[in-house]
Amino acid sequence: MIIELEPIFQREGAVFPLEYTFSVEDDVIDSDIRVSGRIFNRTGIVRISATASYSGKTNCARCNKAFSFEVSVPIDHVLLAQAENEDSDLYIVADDLRLDLDALVCEDVFLAMPSRFLCRKDCKGLCPVCGADLNEGDCGCKPAADPRWDALKDLF
Ligand SMILES: [Zn+2]
Ligand SMILES: [Zn+2]
Image (cartoon, rainbow, N blue to C red; front, side, top):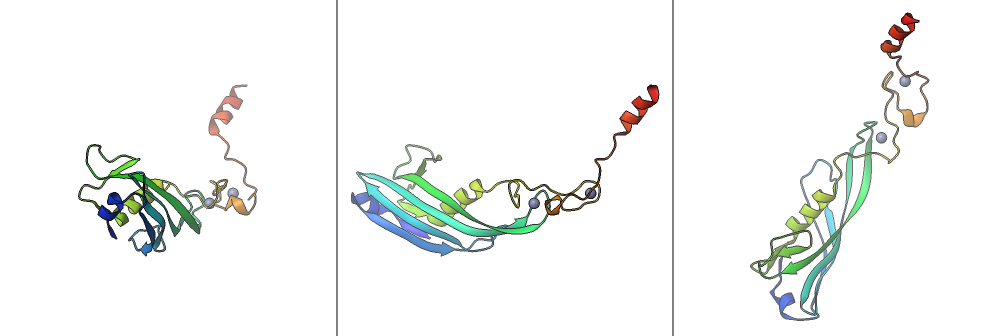
């Protein structure tokens, strides 16, 4: 979605509500991305303040179980009409007074994505000996003996 910012920049107090969805091609993102919020001009400063939410599906990096999750990512930036600053976390420069909102939202969504997904924070993962899912209970395996200790034992 391309937003024409000119009317928002021109009028103090202008509010442009955002309520839309768009689709992305991604291995993890399993739904449309829903954007909800607004772009507004308060005392000449134009900001976007919105939330992007989606559901995802992936495999846990520790136990490899497939799981689904819901995420909300804040989309908060000051929009500038002139390129006196480079884009940064805080400022987005909309040179021609047009904002490619899908691109901006995608950038924020992918920046917020973790590099490793865990099914839960304290996932115990798989037993390195038998491969059992340790979240479902102790499999009874002893930690593998370190052969270096056996060699030391022989010395005494
Ligand atoms: Zn897990
Ligand atoms: Zn085991």
